[in-house]
Length: 278
Image (tube, rainbow, N blue to C red; front, side, top):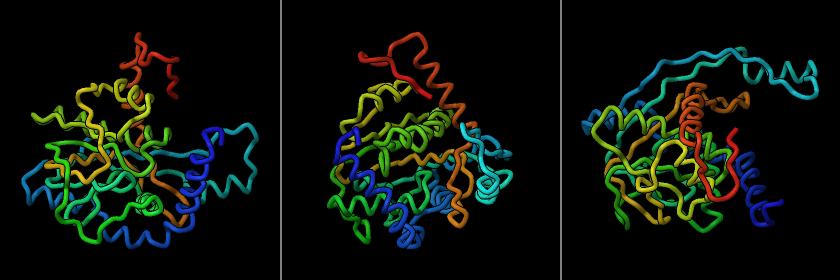
């Protein structure tokens, strides 16, 4: 609540939608959410890049360390939810022709289908419901009507992009695929970010090596992207039956930490107080 009543109410509304309303419409979203096999077919048909890189990972899990020791019942519940280990898939980078951005809280789309952004159908549904509450509506079929045009780009907008936690955990991690793509092709995509970004968002982009002239602030209007770079970090399977959400590969976080340390080492990233990145 220290961030203001409006922000507090919006956060509470998003939580309630995610917990109670989104699961009811998730199946409808999932039917329009392209998976990695769909992306591979599109790229094969269009003759564009679709590549998994690095190796899959298996991680053994142990309960977290807490100030108060976990009770035995909590420990058993934790193991039922997360199990003893998780398997994390390889990251993927795919260049998809003819994508469109519609509104701030939803995924990019192609031919009426949602492009994946490394989030579950439930999270996407929450973003769409929030958009509708704020007066934005997603057409049943996406056709013409784009008012802005971009050549080749990766997009860091969408559900929860302005949330500090999710910005680092769901958005900046996509830049690993961006880096892989630029190193293995002759193309350096633009980076579409939310309009009027916070200072900490700008600092974090500079810290991971994305210069200001590579940014495009999205004007929150329908925008056509000639070649949309989908970057999915290594993720574990999503499992709503146990409450386990998708977990990002530790290797992806090591990459993000390494790039951030390198970017801020020996330099102030802002004219205000120094940032602390955990």
